[in-house]
Length: 252
Image (cartoon, rainbow, N blue to C red):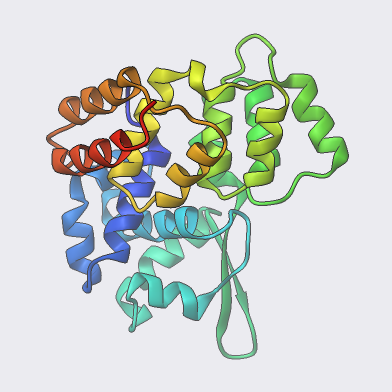
C-alpha cells in the first residue's frame, strides 16, 4: 500500500516534536519532506513550510485556531525570522491564515485549500465527508448526510474512519461504526494504520481502535510486519516489532 501524504505529515510532525533544532528536524525528514513537496507542489526552497503544515495538521484539531506561542514552542521556533519566508509562502498560497493583534501574531490556522489538495483524488462524496469531519463536531444534518452516503459505491469509508480517528474526531468515528462499519473486516487497511502508528506518536489511535472492538489476530499482525519490511528504508523496523509484541498480549 502506497504511503499517503497525510502519513508523511504524521511522521514529519513526530520528528519536529522530538528534535531540538529546526534545521536538524528538516534534515532528518528530507526524504519525506521531498515527497510532500512534490505532492502539494511546494518548491524545495520552502522545505520548512512542510514541517509547519505537518505540525499544524497532526498535533491540533483541524481547522482550529492555534495559539501562535504554543505553535512556536512545538516547532522550537524561538526566532521566527529564521523561517519567515516559509510563512510568507504559505500565506500567499492560502495554506495558512494568521490572526494578528496590534503588534503580534496571536494564532495560526490551516485553511481548507490544504485539505482539498490532500484529498483531491477522492470521490466527490468522500471529499465532502472528509471536510465534514475535518476539525469540527458533526451536527444532526451532517450526521444524516454521513449516514446516507456511507456505503455508496466508490466511497473509501475505511480511509474516512481512520482520518476521523487521527484528527481526534472520535464522535464522528464512533458514528461511522454505529452506521455499520466493521474495522475487523479491513485487515489490510488496519494493518497499514497500525504500522503507521508504530512509527508516529499515535498511541491514542491504537487505544481507540482497541476500545472500539479491534480484534488482534495473527493475520493483522502479519500485515503490520509486511508493511514494516516493505518500508524498512524509510522507517525503523524495530518500532513495528515492538508494537507487534505489545499487541500479542491482546491477541485472541
